[in-house]
Image 1 (cartoon, rainbow, N blue to C red):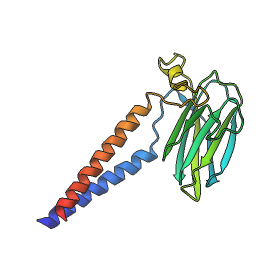
Image 2 (cartoon, helix red, strand yellow):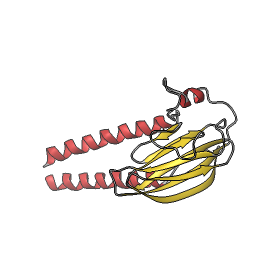
Image 3 (tube, rainbow, N blue to C red):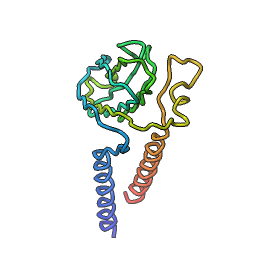
Length: 184
């Protein structure tokens, strides 16, 4: 009986892991986003790699850390943004997204920072042009929150499903741990 439960549990765990991996590979983007560039690179711990964006309009930077942890800093006032000097940032472990508004002065400086927790980080950044024309009701508030306008954080309602997905994965993992404790 215990062997049957063990086998069923391992099959369930394998299917959850496979579905999670395939969902990470399939990047869903809105139809309004047009892919402009794909940039891949490596960055050492504590170092920056700088890029310059000249394209006009609303731009979306979507960066995935393939190895290690690369963070994203953006500025329209300096060509070399850092964690001390930036307008927009995304510093998550995994996928980083920054929405650059059309009113930002060009060229926009982009800094990719290799987090010191990893000896080397590899990243892939996709640059999209957002063709939507209607103003988003929360767009300006998302780019200028807090008392210090020099440190604005990018956030958009599109991030909400990712948060819900993260909570769902946390619940699934907790349930799986509980089942493992009961079985073993």
